[in-house]
Amino acid sequence: MPLRRLGSVACALGLAAALLAGCGAGSGEGNPRATEDSTSTASATPEGTESPEAETPGTSAPGDGAGTSIADEVQIVADLEDGSGFRRVYAVAPDLTDDDAIVDLVTRLHEAEPDALWWLYSNDEMADVLAESLPRTAEGDLEGYPAEWVEENTLAHLVLMTDGTERYWSVLKGWDSGTELARLPYGGEYG
Image (cartoon, rainbow, N blue to C red; front, top):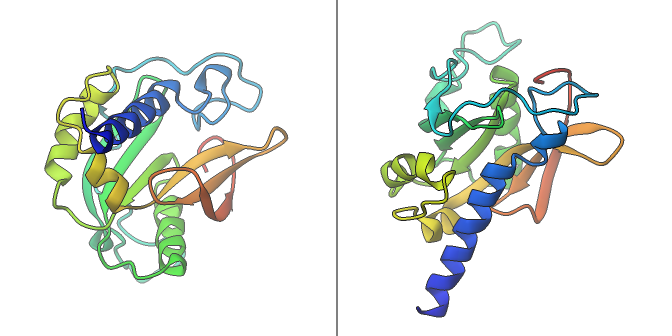
């Protein structure tokens, strides 16, 4: 197997492991549906089932009163709830030009959908393939998962983190967790 293919498989396995692990969901850490002192996981829902909230996110940006739709700024690829209780929304946002624009959009998406972990992509070239493969990746089946495309086209993702003393939402650049663009406050059970 060529080295590049092995790298893509390793990337996909890492993503699948992260999906399954739920960022420490077993201890309640990182799980937006767990309480602060929770020591058990949220009730299990099979990976890939549609979330009851699987509607187009945010009909208007909170607080603007003008009814501006943030849904016009992204194309939802998938809206899934995993077995750890995480709601994961995958979307294409092709018009983002810089890190400030990414942070601005992610902040507004988070305000509109405070229980969601967001993954934003720069184009929709492989969006259908990604959407079709996501439910299977959580079960360890990586056939058809577009790992190379995900690595090359992920603009940013939003995850719930902890530093050991407090929880916060982190806007991370790209597909891995190397560069934090911003921290958003953790405002309770979901936000």
